[in-house]
Image (cartoon, rainbow, N blue to C red; front, side, top):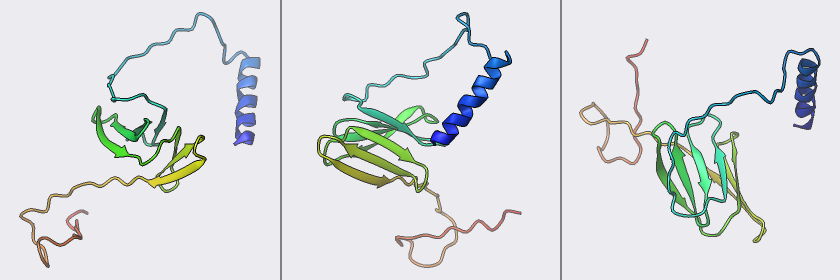
Length: 140
């Protein structure tokens, strides 16, 4: 990670040296507020999945999960103790929570579950089985 930062620093320095990249006081920026939510309690930390599908907001006793695609809060994950930092790890889709006051670490795997409507389709076995295997064999 440190080596990568050094390389990027050298690249930026080279661009600035040759006049390709200029930092100017007259540069403009533009922004648009998409939505603002009242999440019900004080946010302590924020983490986002790499694909941008989920934003996790850590509060005192829960994690509020926001979906930019749906532009809404779609899940609240209750916590059994207080944490003050949250990180998202792409390896294994993990949320890593830490508490500096309690000296604890908690790792939560985040899996997205997508409902598949199989009503009216042919199937083998009981209709109320706890596991259903859907086969999409009509694709070429």
